[in-house]
Length: 116
Length: 113
Image 1 (spheres, rainbow over the protein chains, first blue to last red):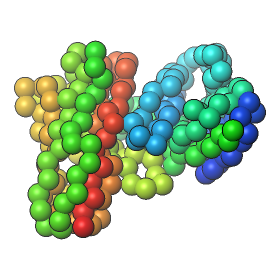
Image 2 (image 1 turned 90 degrees about the vertical axis):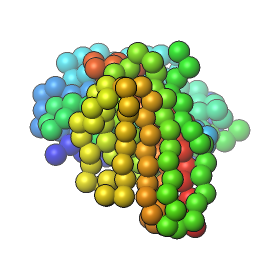
Image 3 (image 1 turned 135 degrees about the horizontal axis):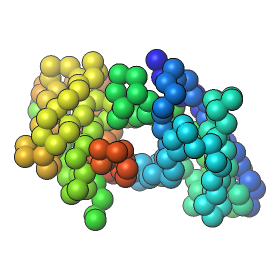
């Protein structure tokens, strides 16, 4: 069965520090999708990125970057020069083909607090 | 494209009452999903519609829960005879068949007192 583990429950940093959020996944499928979502205090889940299992190219979007490594089943997320507005809960999630190809399996999330 | 809309944002109800939530997906999205999120946890899948057909229901959905998506447009989630354990955030999402644009709404926070 699929599983997503976010071992870091809470992280606290000072503004302008770089921070990496870890995500480790388990799946038996060779075809799967990985996602990151941000959930600010307002509650909405904001989509950040989707990556399919055949695309191991790392991605950078502004201050955000993602490191996908199939060899270690990890899909880590780094925020460079963090800002107070980055404070939120961040979720890593997985969709695979086993049983369904539409159901997101989420990790428990990492609460990031960026202090001024 | 106004995103996924959910109504109401908050609902407080007494135990035993029925409640109904509404979700309006992104108009061109065929797929619609409901998830439930309890405090300190990630969202958990409840049910899935492709157009108007409900194709999967999680074991988390007891007989007190029912969801509909008439005409493949908006969806409603009804909880009958609410219990305190139903208190949670109920999130709706929609996407294309290809999973492109898997977008969540702001959720409905239910408190059962």
